[in-house]
Image (cartoon, rainbow, N blue to C red; front, side, top):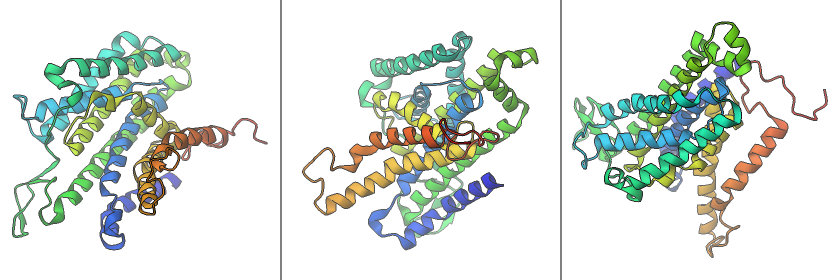
Length: 361
């Protein structure tokens, strides 16, 4: 019930936030776009949680699948290419494309265990970056692919006179101020859909097999669970939703950005979301995304703006700009979490009773 109440509270706050921002916050304190980035990284965290939290596979290359999804979406939609499928067909196609990439990586490597498999995923992330950077005839190299279509909602449009009816509304448009709010709820809808998928997987026979592999692979094998096939399913599922997050990210920015935007730091950030929230906990991942991305994209940014408005940090001092504190804060958060709450802010069921090392009984 505690987790259910937390999820309902988070959903209620997310649904009400545009109204709160429009009516209660000053105009300069708008964080609607930053909240969309929280939704996207929450989807990425849910994907990583499926393979690392549920199955126990340390994946250090989840950003590579995010990059694959972003570039797949761009190639399927940008005017430079012959496909030009539009937002919805392209964003849905990122799922099978990501799953295929996960299968191609997992098929020859999932027989490995522990650190060896983690090193493989780390190397895969670096390989994807270099390929995207050097196949510039397709990916445009470090320039990135742009512009890309914004999210759209079928059968909805806002006419110049403010009337609404059937049609297609470009959510990047500012007509009557409806675009940004509709895109916000669309991204929230993607997050809710991803949550429903992973929640049902967690409660299903597949999810129980994943957690069995995590706890004891040898015992799982003796009970008739094929470890490699089971891990392959987890790996492909995680890759599919990581690619979806990448496609949403590219659509939101209207550009893939350069391949370096999907580097090892993104994978570590996703891992931090899972660890801080609670390894194997779906509710914990949502809380972890709110904490980690909220601090990075909202709290530190607004603090920097507030200080600069008062002349603090305007000289460019490294320690006077809060934006330079983020990795220090992330590292400190991980140290404190491992010391005092090793199971995360919202531990997975059955994991909350473990005490940190050195704690008194």
